[in-house]
Image (cartoon, rainbow, N blue to C red; front, side, top):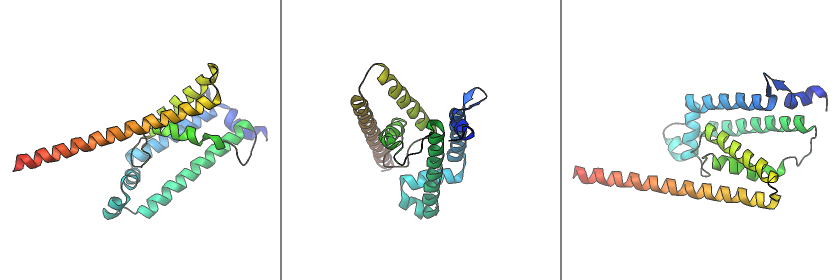
Length: 184
C-alpha cells in the first residue's frame, strides 16, 4: 500500500489521529442529521412502526433506501480506513466484529426491534465496549471469555430494554385508564 493511502488512517490532524478526527466528523454530521432534520425524524418513525409511518404520509420506500445507502457508505468508509490502518485487504477482514458492533449498539440504547436509540448512545456504547475489549486482554482474560462477556452484555442490555419498554407501556395504560375513569 502506498504511504499516502496508509497516512489516511495513521496520520494526525490537529494532534488527533485521523481515525478519531473522521469519527468526530461523522458523529457530528449524523447527530445533526438525525436530531435536526425532517428526514432524520422520519427514519425513527419508519423504524418504530412502518405501517403508521406509511399512513401519515412518509415515503417509507425512500427512507429505507436512504438508510441502506447511508449504511453502505459508512461501511465503505470503515473498510477503507481499516485497510489504510493495517495495510492489508482480505475478503474476510473484520469478520469477527459483528458481535462487538451489536454489543456496542445495544449497550448504547439501540433497540433491536428498531425506532429507538441515539447517535450519542451508540458512541458511548462503542467507547464502553472499546474499553472492555482493551482492558480484558491486559488482565489476561481469554478471547473465549471475552466473547462470552460480550454476549452477556448484549443479553443484559436487551433484557433491561424489554423491562423498561414493558414498564413504560404499563404506565401509559394506567394513565389511559385513569383518564377514562375520571371522565366517566
